[in-house]
Length: 306
Image (cartoon, rainbow, N blue to C red; front, side):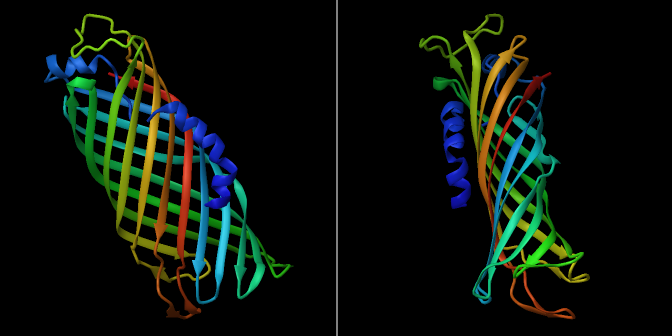
């Protein structure tokens, strides 16, 4: 995490200071929420960018610790059905191009005990329902939501070098599949050209608005988990101790009567797995070490309202 922050913190800080914060809002919604209580709105958001994954594993008994940083190109999506205040939606992040990075291990008192190449991917999909609240004095919306997250993390390792000796044809594929309980809140608003305040906007009028903003906070608590590793076939780990926290922010520029916006999005978070105890298997004593993934992403895309 320290290496990741040292390398990328200036860029992340600049983006987050510029963006101002969550999900997407259209200014005319302030009036439509009041005048069109039965109207159903569909929003579709798609964006493309890069995701940075900083991964570590730690096991205290053997004094083993690994480090790696991977950068993948990803697609983010969010499809939302809004019945004025109740909402239902599906969203997610999918890797589309995968970078092969270097992973380094210290173990058994040896520095750089092992090196290998690593492809690290994280695919997740969220299904959620929620309810929005409108705060007239600031013309802001707040949405509380909950649902389920389906997630798959994949670690593909090859080109092993142990104590300086290359390992011929050595390869492993580790998969962590989980389902978690999702909790979130996001806030939406807009930026005005003038500083004048108004509490109500007539749907027929053109409000002095071209920019929107938002922020979001999420947490995920694992419900089920299954880990498999190709080097120990038939052995699975099901310990589900862990958590995910994430903050995201969005800046939107409205086009075509604010039915379409160009969105710049940034997000940052942390994924932690507690790991397992030692287990006796046909391959000897083995365990799943505790591990941590610190991540952030930057994407740009389009938001459509129907």
